[in-house]
Length: 242
Image (cartoon, rainbow, N blue to C red; front, side):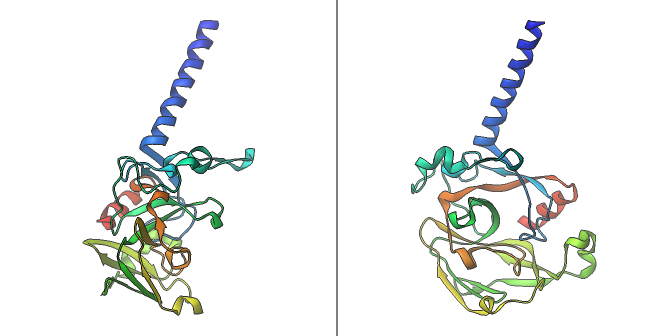
């Protein structure tokens, strides 16, 4: 009996260690909690974030959040001593068009966000209303026929467009809500060194670099590579990412 219990405990410990290594160094699971990335990613989509894509920083450490148990341990609690460095271990830079997961500013209470990289260090970004320019070039859009988005159901409201940027073609959602007064003001930003400018694909209902500014690459957790659930998201994301 004791031998059986011992083997069970060993199995559980090994499983936890493997899961810990998997989540810390390789891939981190992520649920889409909001509609800021519609139609690329819908509420309830379950995906994996590739932590190896850009190397490792303090943000790569796992977070343990269990509201029911009052547990809220952030990556900074584990690895905050490494925050603020200008280098990532085995690091590389995010590219324009990448969909990334990152640690939001402290004002957002340690939340983790997912957005699309529109500009990298040195890029000059101009945003006015729904129009976006990168280094003087306006991002081109092409309207997607209504019948092509009907299968997405009630989650999609507004008009869907193909947007082309940096050799990539992906979908963005416009016209979900009336733009407020501040959204019509022109925003001009030169992306600082070691930073990226990010936007949600749901352009009218997303908090992103238009309000919080560019994101330091040290706060980036990883690149979205694999969609696990639901099944239709595989084709949706695979088609529109590149």
